[in-house]
Length: 466
Image 1 (cartoon, rainbow, N blue to C red):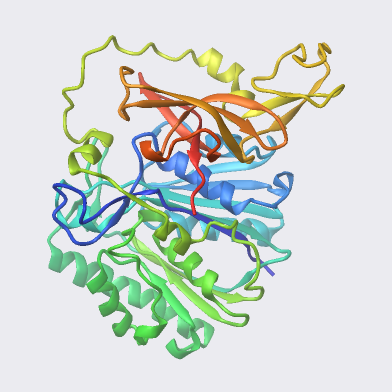
Image 2 (cartoon, rainbow, N blue to C red; image 1 turned 45 degrees about the horizontal axis):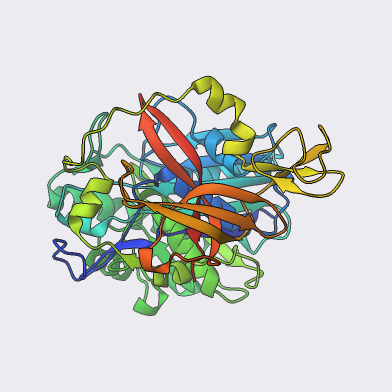
C-alpha cells in the first residue's frame, strides 16, 4: 500500500528573534542564509530524507515551491543532480500555488499507484517574503520537507485523500513582485481559508467515514497562530490534537508548511495513530496517514531538533541585506564575471554531485578528480566517489576580511573527509568564535552568486548541527 517510507526536513539555522536589533517582535522566525534559496533547502531536506536509502532506487523527483529561483528552467533537475539520483528518472517542478506541496504528494501517490514508479521523492521548499515589518513577514518562515513515497517498507500508509479546487484571489504574487500580496482580511479569511479548508476536511471525513475524534494529530495551513486554533475548533478538533503550528519558532513555510506539520506529527506518533494534514491555496487538499512503523528513519534531522538548533541574526539590517530588500552601500567592486555555462555543464559531476576520484590501485581519494593519483602515480585508474554525504573535520582555515562577500569575513576551510579525501571550500552558517582546527563539519549545497540570471551552485562546509 502506498505510503511514506522515510521523511526529512530542513529548517535554516538562523532566526529573527527578540535579540535581533530592529526586529521588534517577541516571536522567532526561521530565515534562510544569504546563500540559501528554495533549491538549496530542498537539497538539504532531501539529504536528510535519503540517509541510509539506496538512491538508485528512486524513480522520480517532484520539486514543489512558490519561490523557485528560475522562472524558465527546471529546478527539480538541479535538486536531483545534487542528490546524485539516477539520470533516467522523471522529474518535475510543481509551482504557482500555495498548496503545490500537497499537489506534488498526490501526483507521486498516483504515479506509484499506477505502477509507473516504485519510489518517488517529493520535496517542498519555500522562501516567501512579506513586506518589511508587516504581520505577514512576522508569520512567514523559510524551510523545506522531503518525503520518500513507496509501496514497500512504509512508515505511514495513506488512508485517503480529498481535494477541492476553487479560483480564489486572496493571496497572490505576480511576475516581478518581491512580496506576497493579499486582499482585505475579512474577505480573505471568511470567503477563503475559513470556508474552503474546513469544507475540504469535512468532505474528506465524510467520504472516509471518520470523525474528528479518530485522529491523533492534525496539522493544516494557517496564516498565524490565532487562526490556527480557531480553525481547529471550528473543525471539531480538541487542542491536544493540534500539531504544534511552529509560529513564534519557525513560521509558515509556504508550500512546505502542511508537510512540515505532517513530519512533526509522524516523529511523535505511535503505531496505529491516524494523522491528518490539509493545505490551502485555490482550494484545499486533505490527506490522512496511518502510522505503521514509528521507529522508521527520518534522516536523523527531525523538525524539533532543528527548531532547537539555531543562531539569532544580530540585526534586521543584516537579514534585509541577505534578501536584497534594502540597498547596500558596500564597497564598490568590479561586477563578477558571467559564469561559463559550458564549464558549469562540463563540471557537473564535481560541482553539483560533489564527486571525487578514488584510486583503484591504492585507494587514495582526490577532489577534484585527477587523471594521475597523487599518492601512487597510477594513471587513469580511478572510480567516482560521492563526498556530499560524508562528514569531515577542518584541517586548516583562513579568514578574508577584504573579500567582496555578503558574509564578511569570508571563511575558507580545508576539509578532511572521513574515509579519505580533502577539499578546499568556503564555510557558511558559522559563528566566528566557533571556527577552529579539528571542528566537525559536513557539506551543504549553497548558492555562490547570481549573475545574468544564472544561479551558480556549489558545496560549502557547515558546522555539524545538534
